[in-house]
Amino acid sequence: MAHDALKVAVLISGRGSNLQALLDACADPAYPARIVRVISNVAGAFGLERARAAGVETQVIRHKEYDSREAFDAALDQAIRASGADVVCLAGFMRLLTPGFTAAWQGRLVNIHPSLLPSFKGLHTHQRALEAGVKLHGCTVHLVTPDLDGGPILAQAAVPVLPGDDEDSLAARVLEQEHRLYPLALRLLAEGRVRVENGVARIAGLADSGVRLLNPGP
Ligand code: GAR
Image (cartoon, rainbow, N blue to C red; front, side):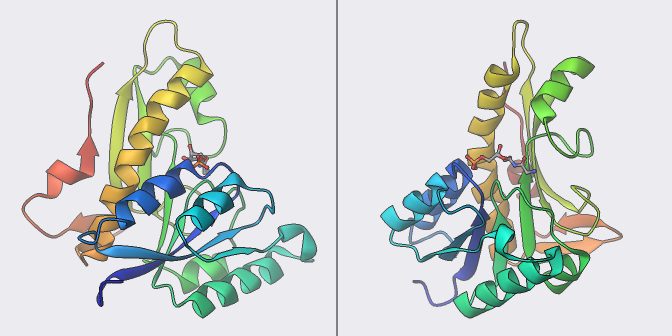
């Protein structure tokens, strides 16, 4: 591991394709982050296999074994700290985190959400985008605050909504961009270029706009 690489814990609940994108990025010695542990709240999550294949330590912390959200989050917190991680990336982690947890990791807790926030917070984003008739959809990487899907935006990728799209085709188009966007956004954090002012993330450096908005044509 590069001496000064950012140490990252990734939290997942399932497939782990975004985890894979981060693992692939971190495989490049020039990339400024390394994944030190992958934690899943679901024992059978396929993402755990991806982590093992990449030689990354894994851990399962089942939310069902805890009496309260606070107790589950305390176990998560302890595991993340034990891993030595500086930053936590949520990658398809489908549990709400308590305000105590998000406060403890403020500025160091990142999520990827499958919509152009602040539109379509929450679940079923692709179906809701289709129902709303939007012509642009996409994904967002943001810092996590107690405000669900409402934290400072680090980067976004837009995709067109095409005639004939259904939930699956739209999800696939967005997911392809998620895999590009998450490594770009994590890099910004790892390079120490993110500063939050009045709830808005400012990025130091001249190449700012080039890496914060991915906007592929149809
Ligand atoms: C991704 O589309 C991610 O944006 C979404 O779940 C999927 C996980 O896929 N996350 C959320 O909806 C968070 N509320 P993956 O396991 O293949 O990365």
